[in-house]
Image (cartoon, rainbow, N blue to C red; front, side):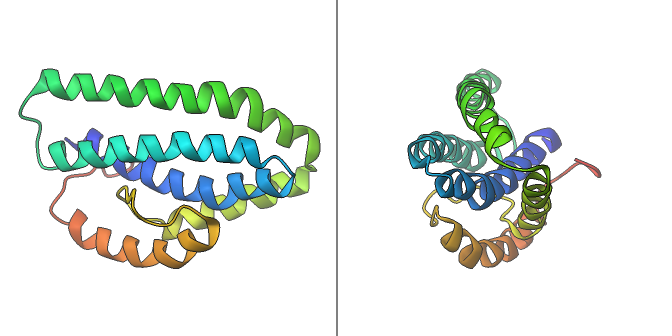
Amino acid sequence: MRLFNDTVKLFSEHDTAEEVVLYATVKNLGLGYLADSALTQSKYMERLLYEMDKKYGKGIEDLSLFEEDMIRLKDAFNNHSGLLEDTEILPVLECKLSQDDVDSMNKWYDRIKTIAPSRPHPESPHSPAGSLLTGPVLAFVDKFRDLSKKFSKNP
């Protein structure tokens, strides 16, 4: 159960930071179609994780159903990160950005993760401004909801 809750938390924080930092940068470089494609995939994964959190957040009763859902999530994640980000987005950023720009993005990404929600919120805004406005409020609410869940000490 801890591993599942850790996964939900890590993905949710990563997803928000990615939308605010990575996709905004890609759009600013004139590659909105790549950012839009990545965001569509990200929203799909967020919806899957949201449904899984509702089903399994307090316990896993049907292991075979859980495994099916995890395979669906893993396939979506592999398609998103492996095919789109690793082969299209990140190589473009490596070519177009200086090392200082990359370092700045990494710092900004780490900061955003600290104020990001720990649970998926598929109906929340999926824009940098929307995430920055709603993220801290949702994160505050999530912290209280997370009190009833078990997490690893150092995910």
